[in-house]
Image (cartoon, rainbow, N blue to C red; front, side, top):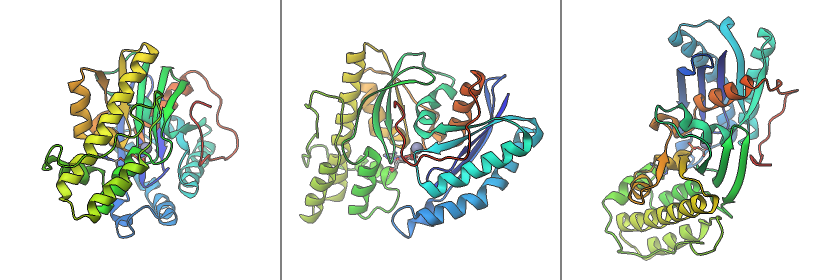
Length: 326
Ligand code: KG4
Ligand code: ZN
């Protein structure tokens, strides 16, 4: 079955075509709104929704053309039902339901984080189940035990800011613009190791939860004391990475699992990847272009569920807040 995936939960419009019979991604396209939101230092929800409306039709036309398929070839549609910005989610939901209705094909609402955590299965080197997934995005930081499609158990999560959010806020303190993760990571490369010591929040809490808001405050103190920006960036990145790696190792040990999947925007982070490798963890990542938000992960998740004959999502709902393991 040919599945169209649609992602509009935040500031990226993503569409993709996944062929469930050939088990292959045929085409995908992402339009990032970063340049539009940059002037405001963060995502403006109303602008995000309006932009998704303008992008969806041309992007969908483009990937159909790239894949050499016609709209009538579609056998199913998956869209991000949540979590995310309500207005932005509604754009994807309306588009998916209208198209699905007109074609008489099933339409499935997909959990955004399920998309992220299954995304390494689109790589050539893919993990078998069970695995532990570390989901580190702008809105979430979670450890999940994954036994198969739809079988997810939450092991731990952040008590306050998400890892990506902490990256973005600290980058802002250092005047690095939005989104700050990649810029902060690049600045840290030239920073001196150990020049500043920042706390390792909840490192020894004995559970698998995280906390990152204190770290951002500690970084603010250093900025106020006119600390060297690159060295502050280095201290921040080192602290976040150490906590993420330590808790991932503990999650693997406590579940007796060997494989770790790292997904979500922060999974693109160089220092995190190097530290995971140093610990000798059998770790799997999505392809670099699929680390951040995209339609491919949604198309893939929908294809798995449509395969198991899950019924079409009834009505017209979105879930701006939604627990994956609930
Ligand atoms: O998964 P994602 O694209 O969107 C959400 O669902 O949130 O993640 C975006 C987050 C942002 O906070 C961004 O700063 C962060 O991922 N990020 C990074 C890197 N690339 C993206 N953080 C650290 N290092 C990176 N290289
Ligand atoms: Zn995401």
